[in-house]
Amino acid sequence: MAATVQYDASGAFAAEMDACDPLAIFRERFHIPRAPDGSDAVYLCGHSLGLQPRNVREYIEQELHDWEKLAVEAHFRGRNPWMPYHRLLTESMAALVGARPIEVVMMNSLTVNLHLMMVSFYRPTAQRFKIVVEGDVFPSDRYAVKSQLRYHGFDPQHALVRLTPRPGETTIRQEDIEALLEREGPSIALVMLGGVNYATGQLFDMPAITRAGHAQGCVVAFDLAHAAGNAPVQLHDWDVDFAVWCSYKYLNGGPGCVAGCFVHERHARAWELPRFAGWWGHEEETRFRMGPDFHPAPGAEGWQLSNPPILSMASLRASLDIFTNAGMDRLREKSISLTGYLEFLLNQQASSKFSIITPREAERRGAQLSIRIANGGRSIVERLNAEGILCDWREPDILRAAPAPLYNTYSDVHRFAERFAAMVR
Ligand SMILES: Cc1ncc(COP(=O)(O)O)c(C=O)c1O
Image (cartoon, rainbow, N blue to C red; front, top):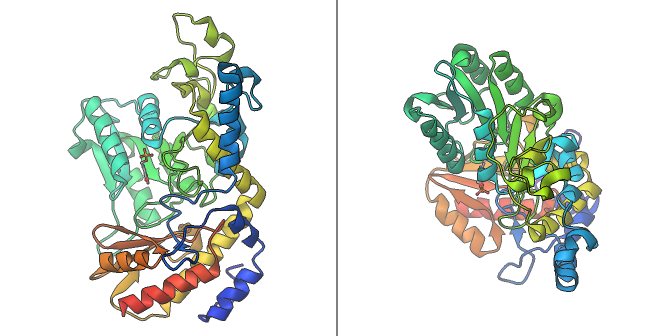
């Protein structure tokens, strides 16, 4: 789509693109916030919190109904019995991250899952103990990783390896990642990168990084917070060891919604790995014998701790049903086109006042563009937001805008670019 369409900066072009967009119908399946003038807001914050699917209320009400009418019995007799409720999410979630059902479970929240995974898969020795992250890794991941290093008695100053762009560049080169792994591989225990970096929007070459890490004997993992539901991911085929993600961004699960966890099938029966245990990770057949010893279930489910949050899962289920209908391939195709259009419009403004720091190549980014603004960027974002054009600001100088293909339009992108250009001028 992106390769064949000749973009044009007129509003009429945006309207035409919307008129022939085969995914346009999906916008109606979301609540679009209102701008102060009563029109639909331009919502470009799907990288932060996705919009509410209209069907969420119905899905949650079903569970409230069963709770009201059946109470504890709903675990077995509810319309969607709560005991195996989490499995209603597994197939569609696994499809979105390219996993087999045994490899995926929805549980806890992202940072909790990251810790649980590191308990099992960060097994440092005196020779091999380093963890590689992006230099500007999301703070929660940095805190989690540093605390794990300290927990094992290592000094993050020495044991935390940060990948950074070359001087004068904004994103990390693949060749630099591979050179680092080549150079320091034998001392690296874990490579843990974002699939898409939260600040720059860079989409990493996950299969190549996994290959390079494995060639050095490292465990390779990804935080897919900004990649799940946004970019194509094939965790099983790429042979990734583990991955974690949240579901409130592109996956539209709602604030604080239950998070995802992937453990490669290779590790499904790795009983020798240490793990933090809770009763819900116990093998299902014997869980309710309430025995004294923990016998983990095979696969990702064996890392569960607690009985799951049904209302949160109901809301995610509503959203995943929409994803299944729309199809990730078609969404990605539209996403490439929409984000390409945003880039095209911004590039019409020759300006030294801002620059796009996200990679130019479609295969190196998802929906988000990050715009570095030399001066006064925060006030631009505040003024845009006050008009109902919602994007966000990350210190010290980055505006993030992400057209989400499920609910954003070409006209949204046109309106944002027009108002942004006027404010920058
Ligand atoms: C890349 C990344 N990692 C971790 C987190 C933290 O997620 P949570 O608060 O759900 O643990 C976020 C939240 O935005 C994130 O973007």
